[in-house]
Amino acid sequence: MHPIFDLVSNHTRFVKPWKEEYAAWPAARAILASCSVPTYFPPVEGQYVDGGVGAYTNPCYLAAYEAHLCLGWNPAKTTLISLGTGRDPHTRQPGDADRSRFPNSPRTGTRF
Image (cartoon, rainbow, N blue to C red; front, side, top):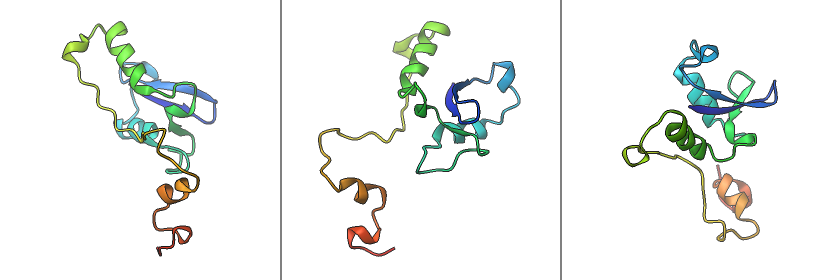
């Protein structure tokens, strides 16, 4: 399952290969869209961005929920891999955001 946000219809889509409406979608489209974090990457096909943009900011929870409760997978025999951009919420200071997003920007004193 790949949660993506559709900017045109303004709602979250859950791309699943067994759903008829997504059967013709290449896996690359679903993966790119679910990884297309705004401000870091452009929307896929000018329409699809990371599913965390919508109401579902924790797609790992959605995947675990569906795997266990909808598909009947045993959590003890399932591995969930999250490649997120998380951080320790208590370590940022004012001005840190400039340096973390653009590590080589002129504002940090280094050159491109």
